[in-house]
Length: 313
Image (tube, rainbow, N blue to C red; front, side):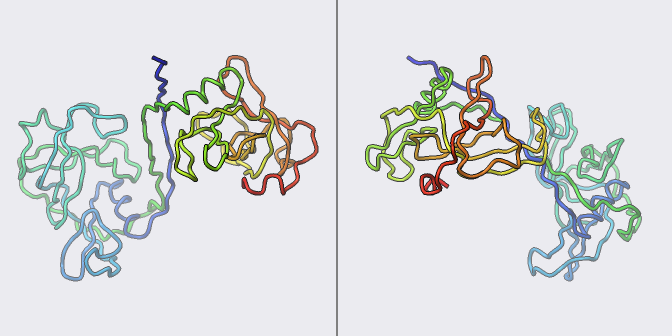
């Protein structure tokens, strides 16, 4: 039986977004140990606040402070916290309706075990020691035996309000290629590029997918392509990627390898970024021990005619 290939992969994107007046006040309030909600025209107080009434779609701006104490409305135990979660030890995810609010806020509850958590239990905010204007300024909730704490009646106006946040998105998973992808990867280790031909339309797809994306039929016939190819389209990258030791600006391009009917993407090197162009003929550059080309560089051939690659854009 052939070896089953697998590799850990991480997809991570730090999304930067600006804040409207309501969200700005809410997060700035957390920085100042104040919890704000927003009041609707029918008298409901929504926490966390939103900028439009979810029932009527009317714009909401009437901010009101609520208490940092509240009641658990529902919960679920988390026995194995993951990277980036609020607590490093087992905890409960809870929906807490803060005193003075009509909706519940999702956060973590620090409790010794699931037997210590119940719907209806009283809790209060545990503030983070260092606060920056984010939901993590609430470190977690903790059990609380007292009555409602009285809010201070803050108006929601702050000095130096938070105007934007970075919301990290990350997915960790293990990738296991199928038959076609495994054959492609094995060929790359021998510095060969192999695709598969569709038995119906006769197009050669690189990397192979095990099936033709046009005809929907299985592919099995292997075809070696390249190693040279043609730049069909490209982009200039001006923002340095995390954990990628490449100085900006640099160029990523779609490259139609000779004999392939689908362009793959790769970095272009060996030429100033502002001289990369559509039709540029390129070849792979390998580094010692690598399982794939490090980048592609110009071959010195004349540029390919547009008519020869226009169907691969």
